[in-house]
Length: 365
Ligand code: SF4
Image 1 (cartoon, rainbow, N blue to C red):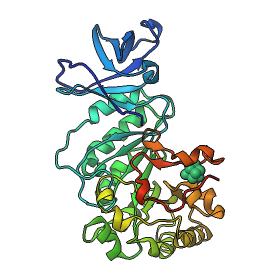
Image 2: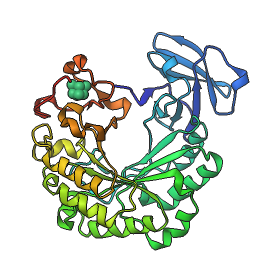
Image 3: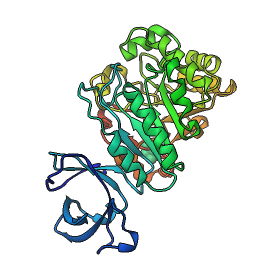
Image 4: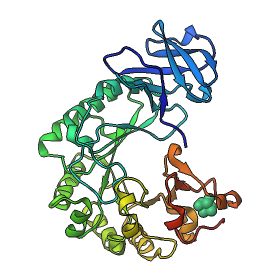
């Protein structure tokens, strides 16, 4: 697994410190900015970087793997956070761990404390590679929507090449947000919003919030009215799997302006791990409701994709809807995958996938 946090020696700082690591040996002054740290030594497993006249010590196996990474040090912690990895297409900034829902499959269960890192993130994205897409996630980022809108608007001005993928539960958009929404370049943002069922009771039960389904649809309509790009996201579970065909029709009818719909397999971490035994739906045994949902959605003009499904668990006619969605840093393959001809097209598994109680049928293709 790729580590997103590395140990570093303590620094006497009072604010988060953002820098970009340059791992070519010796300072490259031709490429020097106020935010660039330069590798000056590597011994054992410690890399020493020079940054604004002092040394940063980072524990790592190979500093070349960190070259170009945008990192953050926070006060009082000996941890270096790899915010934006130069070679990765899966960079996400954690806006907050607070959330007003408690979805039964949540991979990042909410916490009460919030630390506002928007200023540090604003510095970080200035150092991102050209045309990067950056995830903005939580928790629920829209709990801090004034700061979020401000962050995106500033980013649009400073780095118009960047794109953002905001994961939000769709509970906090209000008509009073229209001005702020119009102030950001909407073509740079994809709003990823979960909808779990056409039936409000089923949706509200899954997110553990009464009235969430109704509020969600108000938010979708508001986003649709300004032409925002929307990715509808549905985690497949035993609670909602048989209602997927109904949901396909519902979404194509009520949210026809959505960019596309993604059905997703569960990730065995957080609340999902607690509820795995009762909620994991093994599509290698029964793909029928998912297949019906795809056919219905596509027939009605709603583009549809599958996230987090190993290819061999999908019947062949539906494999073309699958995308390699699992982030590189938490992706793995099983020994059986060694002999598989489809491995380069298959997204594999989450690091924490529980083989003993996972898909019944995994086979090399
Ligand atoms: S055997 Fe492994 S690589 Fe091949 S399709 Fe299945 S999960 Fe993917």
